[in-house]
Length: 270
Image (tube, rainbow, N blue to C red):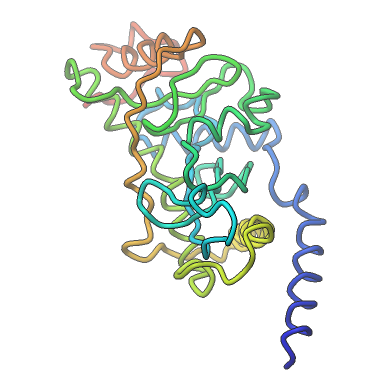
């Protein structure tokens, strides 16, 4: 088959997939949000996390270095990449994606330039999303809760980080599944121009959601999990979510159920 024909087919299919993106990758309805929050409480092993509405992280997708401005794409792991920022639910299904920033840009900067942050699109009031140490802990414009930084001060912080990690890691497994399912694309550098790479990555996330919706679940291969993206970014933000984090940690360490709201009672504490 001529290369020009393959080129035409790939671009035609990608345009068709992008046309249905808003139908496949979208924020949940109220009923779905209740299911998601319950799912994250189950992942964390504590109903204290019953107000979590998603997990967010960034993923580096390998590309071939472009001829111009190649150093912009060289990330801290010393390979060339384009960043995929994704927010997923308790099943690893993507609720929002933001793709295209070069690999040298920090996760926190990508977040602050994404629509979900700039327009305060998600989560709804009273809910939080979870992120790793590469993000700032925020209460506004979005509620984003990160783990406590090392060295941990007390057992309450250690307990919180343990349950936080159990719930948050679903996004890492989601990235692992994405790379495993499309290993011919993500196992090596994408064989496309950098300006077309975001379109290819977006199409893969759309197909990922379609697979999950139809029960086609795949386990990530060992080595495909993105669990090493923890950057201890020291940020003191006036919109900090540290107060919310302290409140959740206190609820998690409460000595008895009488000190908790009704929705958080009747469970065991570790």
